[in-house]
Image (cartoon, rainbow, N blue to C red; front, top):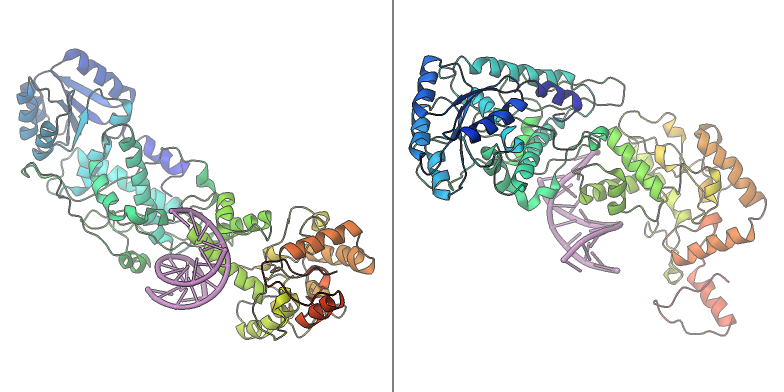
Amino acid sequence: MVCTANDLQGWKDFPKGLRVLLLDGDRSSASEIREQLEAMDYNVSTFYDVNEALSAISSSPEGFHVAIVEVSTSSSLGGFKFLENAKDLPTIMTSKNQCLNTTMKCIALGAVEFLSKPLSEDKLKNIWQHVVHKAFNAGENVLSESLKPIKESVESVLQLQTDNQHDKTHKRTMSIDLENVSRFSDDDNEQSVCDKYPAPSTPQLKHGTRLLDDGDCHEQTNFSTEKESEEHGGECKSVETSCENLNAESSPQPMELKQTLIKEEDFANGSQGERAVSLNPNMEKIHGNADGNTSPKKTEVLNDSCEIKANRKKMKVDWTPELHKKFVKAVEQLGIDQAIPSRILEIMKVEDLTRHNVASHLQKYRIHKRQSAPGEEDRKWHNQRDATQRSYYLQRPIMAYPPYHSNPTPSPAPIYPMWGQPGSQSAGVQIWGPPAYPLWHPTESWHWKPYPGVHVDAWGCPLFPPPQAPGFPYNQNVPGLQTPKAAEYRFSMPRSSFEHHPAEEVVDKVVKEAINKPWLPLPLGLKAPSMDSVLAELSKQGISSIPNKGSSAPKPC
DNA sequence: CATTGAATAT
DNA sequence: CATATTCAAT
């Protein structure tokens, strides 16, 4: 998306050669600034006198893209004069003393930005944005010749992005893209805003975006799944084309930000396709499905008409296969008992995913796990009929009621399906570890969108429980259908744990686990004792009264 | 007050 | 449907 190395690459050269008019009465200051600008490969023309600068502009209207003008208290006249006479040139005012009044006046007079001195590379590096902004927001008629090439350049870059974005992401990601874009913008802001005062080069961005949501900014979602995590930094730049220009005449009360909010719906709906906003009418995202499971990339452009931009509220998370994969991986890594949203989130490291997002997905994940036979490869997303019917079936054996729940009624209740398995990476051995639950293969089991399960139907159908272990919930795998891992498990597991008696310590562990976590299914095919039997056992032992909850469950002798 | 999982809404 | 949001319990 906006931030990939490639994209950035594309951007990198653009500002170079930008023609900057520098007007500063203080020679040393001027040369200092000039150096900084030139360090960024900007083409700087220095002037020490307003009139000279203005005449230069008039004699060469297309000679400059942007101006940086000093407006010191002493010679303020010059600065403002320039501002008033060079309205076609995006002008950035600078001053050593940042008095609010001066700042406001500058802005009111049409300055695109006010930067307090000393100027730093940080403050200067983004000045090109004003140029782009101008290029896109000025009416075609007003667009000076010098800006056209820039506009074209930008357009081509954007177009490029679009084209390049074949990677991943889904179709409906468009909306997300938008998200991204704005998000990045924000980032930019944050960065610049961070360093002390507001020296950001993109004032418009600020208002535009922020105010709107802060409240729920956490809800963001963007993913470029994978990679981006690495390239964070602050290199991403986004073009902002906000519409609210600072009008020269507006008086000192810039605080008036009225922005147009866009309802999420706009995005949601619009994102379907037409919503491309924009600069470039034809910008759109392109799907590319290189390899089966990757999805297309998103792309976004912002429109220049005054309405897009900001609202980046929370868009829906698109659980692409990649993302889901990460999710699953995390879940597996954590193991069933630790797979909680916050942890999963940590492991996934997908920026902007929220705990809520994960929780929600986790919920779905668990549900699916529950429904599909525990050990297999997923399958069936479709025959819900089957799924539903079977679900109870499958679950029942696995459930472990806490002892006091005697109620033998087949309620779908407290079952905790093992949708996640301890350690997928750890070979079979691990299985024996702590939780010691047999692995069934949760992970892949969950076939995500891309491919429908293979032998799906055949699979965990409750109707065809594995011959060998009707009562053994973990063994529902049907021989031919399992994945290699599953098969492996099948062979190794049964052997040690069933054909022979498991080692004592193993049993201990398992029992311990079972006691500590009564909500989990009992391992080893054990069934929870019925209340009656428990009571009976207790009375045998001379215990007639039950403590009532709190106190731990009766140990399975 | 933060997290979790389930229920419910969109 | 797939996600998000809300809710009740920890």
